[in-house]
Image: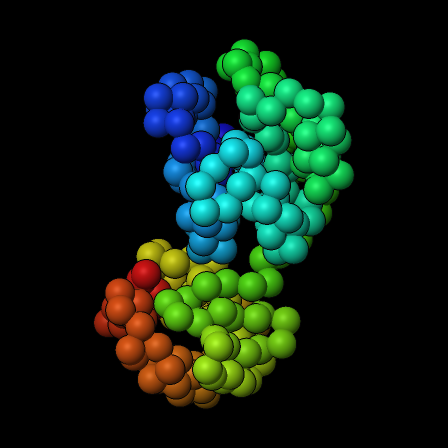
Length: 227
């Protein structure tokens, strides 16, 4: 059975600990962030099934965070947990694209029920693939095959972009050589293998100065993209 992954932002350490512990006891994987900016950065780096956001947080509040998340993913369920009780706040949250708004103090049983409902609903939809990734100092736009930041833009070939996306979707995991070739070219062919080596060499050169990022060569097996 799949373990669903939750992005949870909350600056109240005690509440965050209790909520995270309850969710984990119910077989959810929970990544907790103590402010909205960290929540956004984490969302860009990892894949999640549902988001649970406090509203009043430092650096970036929950409303701002939800707005930025919706630019990246229009379908992921978002639940607000907030001490703000005004009807106007609830309406604002829902208009920003949230699926529900629970007022603190909330019942953990109700939260679990909401999560279950929204995950079942989202699983019926065709998932939208992530199109923008963060890699070190770069943003990777998979639709336009470019790596970019404020000072630089690097164009990739379609195959290079497909290879990089495959690595990012399987980061820190071993990808067998034949698995990569079949995914990119549909065949485990010797000549395609030579092209694969060229693409990997170029990606290594581009990312050589990115600390903690590497494409490991596992001799006789394949590769591992570590971050």
